[in-house]
Image (cartoon, rainbow, N blue to C red):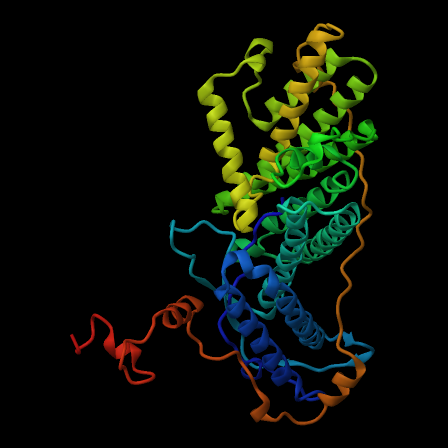
Length: 476
């Protein structure tokens, strides 16, 4: 499901050293204070274990939403445009220098990529808005995780989670699209991969592909049937079979194909970028495969409903090819080797453990889960075709070549630029109070802070003297 983005961290800066305002003298200091709160929230979020980080996403989002209007106010003052109907004059004293840790670039295994030094307010604005888009995607990921927990959600909870996730995806898409349009005015690409034009365009297509794909999840009963089948706490199989309502298979197939097309565009854009994290590249490819395989499955369901079981089986075999799994023949589907069955069971248990822990699940964009659904239908339809109505199974290649065009579902709304309220703008006309500045604590990196906090003090050590008892100090 959604890609598990890592929120970047940043160093402290002071806008008062780079900007001054004759109309609103308190604006640079207020922006510095708001940024310090964001920096502190990002550091705290990073220290939380990955499986529990979803609990702090709302805090990070609220701090970003409070800080971003100040950035746009500074940007409006530099460009000579108005902010909330009021003229703001901002003068550049010296060039702003910021540091952000990139999270979408390649790095040495086991080590984080270093912070990248950037100049200009534009870079700060882009990294901040990108972080907000990552938060939206992670919130959508947290919502969809509830659909795969051990406790099966009710139909109402399922619809609520999917609707909320869809809204988060569209919000992330709006932010990325705004950044793409704004980056089109640049004369040169930035040093940081995260805010480069190809990556921003790929993320805009990726979030729209995810928002399109989950439109069918609400009315797709088959993943829930597979989940019900492997749920140890469910006893419904004793007295009734899983009910599969009829679905609008042809419509769902075209929606999935539209999602696959967006993912294919994202994959092409990432191919033009250099040194992008391989996990993101693989995730986009898996999403493209999963969406196309879902389309094949729905077309197979449409054929099976029409009484063409043989054609339906061919569509399912084509779906397995799209997923990258070996498309087995009829004899191999009937009896697989003991080793392959053992390997499949081990993979399923490993994926179930990831979902249970809430860490690392769905990094294959749902490809493995879709493979489970295809295998369930293949087993069922092969049995029906062998016992009730024997039909020839045509080759899947001509069917894959005749796939219909995709159909768009969403009409995304543009990103609404946030502005400061009238009361805040009026308040910033007063001279600044240096005592109110907050830059987010020390200027140490998050890694060093985490290391200091995770190192317990020796027994009997004087408080605050933990570093003096290190192995390389003079005490040893």
